[in-house]
Image 1 (cartoon, rainbow, N blue to C red):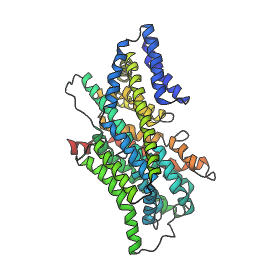
Image 2: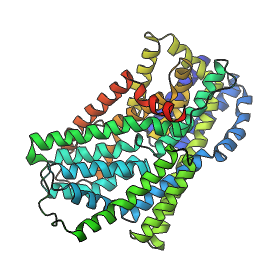
Image 3: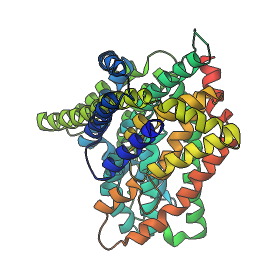
Image 4: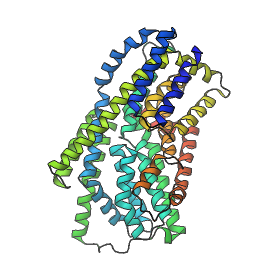
Length: 458
């Protein structure tokens, strides 16, 4: 019975989460309950729990994680000040006269918003409220419009600089060092959040290009599904100036944030500070800004940040108890005995993460599942950057897949009742196939994720 305790703990946590209990308190409470049983029964050494204060101090003193509230602040500020809405409207005016132009605008603006927030729900809801009525009014197919918005909303998993990649990068960094120490490498190499940002660039841009190509093909072969906008004002100097005024500042902010990281001028945390400050300046000079909006932005940032760090604390306790019961050895023996070697182990991990994406958010999966499986896969020789990008795209696909994908639920909540749920499901299917295709491409050619970090950071 004792050797199965890690598996029982993991299953019990998943069941309690499915019942709707808060993630952070589920992780911490369930772990403490099992730890008590383990100490009483003699199957868990209580010394494991003494490492918890050091773990918690490591979390609150982690410089990388300071980027989380700053990037969240940046994204929420762009949304609340209606900068994002202006950007979408101006992008729509720019591409509108083209068939499929509104679809292109949604993808490009959604990519920028996703990069700003990294929170799927916020992006899907915002894009649904802003762009769906316009697309339907212009005669777009409801399936294409809803599928386009849902798929674009999930880009926050893979387009840097996203909160998801920051958290995943921090967890993978610890797992990589742990794996190297287990392999007898006592001067371990490190993998940073910047490595993950750079590694995600090519796969993320391939994904965006594939989305744009799909919308272009639909517009070409089915022009009635993605018509051109008919009521754009005529081109004039004033119109072009107004267009540039709405497009250039937010684009410049995103480029400055990401460019400073890629050029090595700033760390992700410093770049996040630039982003938060820059978003505030944009809101003051180009958007709608007042003390009420500032308070709303700060409240939203505080809520999201508190949730993330509470989950961090719960996950730290879960990780200690899981290891105390010998969970690492159980997972390692299961993977090494698995037919197919590294390929078989990787396939099983991807399948498990995909299925868990139906019931758990990316933060929960990053904190609960990744610390368990990543050290074992990394010990088997898997590249940490490639593994991180594979997990991100896999989760992105899971969040889009009917009938349980989170993105579908978010859009269903803001879509008009006249659009049946089956229409949303039908609309996302081509985008799911695109994402699976990119996942297969990345699996076949890991260099798509590893080449650029090697070039930039050596």
